[in-house]
Length: 531
Figure 1 (cartoon, rainbow, N blue to C red):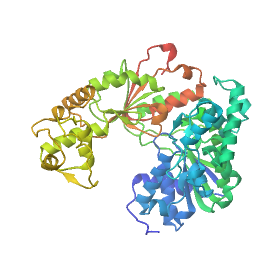
Figure 2: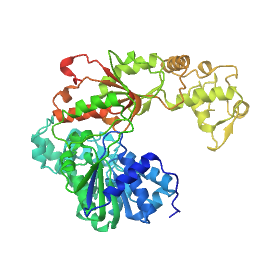
Figure 3: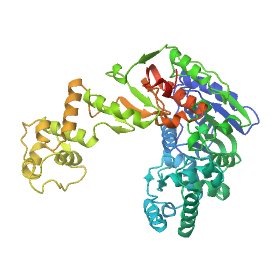
Figure 4: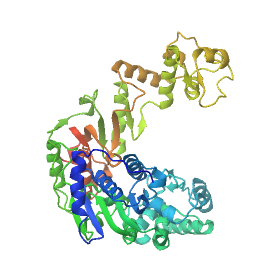
């Protein structure tokens, strides 16, 4: 392990260390850390890791487990940078629960479900189960797939909640009869057993049964975002508790918005052992904090807690439309309870020339941005790499008008660079140097061409990281922005959702704002969240 790096302590770190000294006293094995919005619960956990390393605890005797791959990687990378460590080598137990199970079970890639397995199973049973998604809870070393077919989703949910399948079916609104559900369940299980395959839920169940014995003893075990764990995942957590001298479990029950995915927030609330609430938010201004407290007071089943806002007042403003907000400066989160509510806004933002991302996807593709920028670089006499050349050629006619026939398939090393002269002499470029991008890139779709022009008129740097992000509230959890625009409309499904769960969703939404919160008046007051 590399030498531990020291540096001056910030006020925030000093406050965190005071908290650490308090929590590290006592005979408890498990300790809860409640982290209201912006109070820095992950930072607190990492500061505790820092203190442990400084006290001589070997890095391989520290486990840091997170709910999602993104969170696990961020924690691992932050710790590696802060402590001057090699992420994968020195911090082997900074993982998701699934990744830990995969590692401890000694699994191989060919033992996990893949799209081709779902296709084969579908052909066998005569039902299409190939609605495949990229799972967000996996890690880089797990190459398995998840089916989003409603029947398989319900089967997985029942297992995560440790419910009998028939009971789970009777409590659901699944649009399939029980005979179909039972048939798929039995066929799916038989297929996995016959082919010696596991899915994500199997990994957890097998880890609890067989894998825990291979887990090392930990000095410290940290579990982040614990309010999102399902009953089956809690079984994993309690198994790890027995492997650790001390276990710190961090979360916020007020931000528990994944009950529909099996999360058991009541388990987190009722955990025995010590607990502490982080008291100071570094994100939420006082005016927005007051509104958040109004929302959270509506939650009936919660752990009572208070925290202080930051000193800035911030602003809460009601608007009739998202377009009433001037988004020309700062970072923006436009949030809705359901995806479809944001669809009409996309075209409006494009027509106004704003660069934005929608559910993680840029409003203008990176290939188009690369092509336009690359062509303008060539015109300035600069050299561009081969990937940029391919992007340019992608949007040029290859019939001898802009690029010579057959010249688009450039054979070159990835580290080769080309000037305009190089492309003219040896790579089949025919377009003249004096043509601007909107003439040279003649195959660029007209809608994208118009959008780029609108962005340039507004002064947007369309190759930059978008300042404006359109997202559902669930996808934005853990994020923040200077400005948050919140649609108050509720979907038909949300109108049937338990009150506490809806309150928590909108509590998460308003507490993403660092400066200003804009509440968009709903179209129908009877189908809206009232604030």
